[in-house]
Length: 367
Ligand code: GLY
Image (cartoon, rainbow, N blue to C red; front, side, top):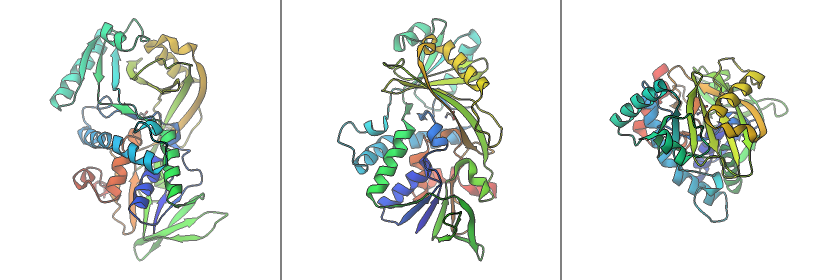
């Protein structure tokens, strides 16, 4: 039996793929689907989130983005969703990301980025301010230009984890709502996990997959640290935007992710404060202030939710997926800003597929 420690999007995606392949699997998590996956906006945006030094991450992101439509369609079928458009169950939207600029300096930055993307063979379109507003009429009149990444997409991560649980339930998998206090080690190998009260017992496994996000470092020697992100959810009767919009405001990036039901997710702060998940007045203020610069109408919307999640950051911003170096222990953690995007690829790698990409995120690199 495989034991997955962590019932977020990565752990559940792995469990689902393993269950589909006929392997017995148990997920252990005291509060499944309540961590970073619950806070996340769900951007599948490897192109617009690319940075100059992170081409390996881009390769992983693009590969996983391409896997999302089939992943969503298979998940919908397995979760027993009434037939409809593939991807409807998880609100998969493939309308791209629009990155906007306000000043000549911002435009120069976007232009340079567009050149870099062109060189990498990524599809991007440079747009004037007017063209941006034609696509998104609620954008500020101060927007001077933008860059459209038409292949970027997004999902609703809460729907994804709900669907994964439904699909797993239909396959009769086991979920133990317990905290893991430690790994069972025997002759240099990991043989299972120790469960906290009220279970207070050992759970033996052929293989333990550590998918505990920012908490992974509490169970194994892995270079994962929590990176706090505060996020807000606004609500309106009609969607204010038709695609993801992002921009640089006051030196930091803000993004707005629309849902079909009128929800608009605004994110996210990036803070190195350990395991602090308090939502602060300053965090909410900055998000609203920056979102308002991009789309002035946001202040008319209902403030539906504020939340903070912890991204599992690694020293090189690449995830840790694959054999840990200790027999019996596999890692599926360290996804930092890309946990939702990388979920299908993570599951594929743990199942032994995608060996070329697996090499890019192998935990071996830190040994
Ligand atoms: N991928 C967006 C974030 O982590 O804020």
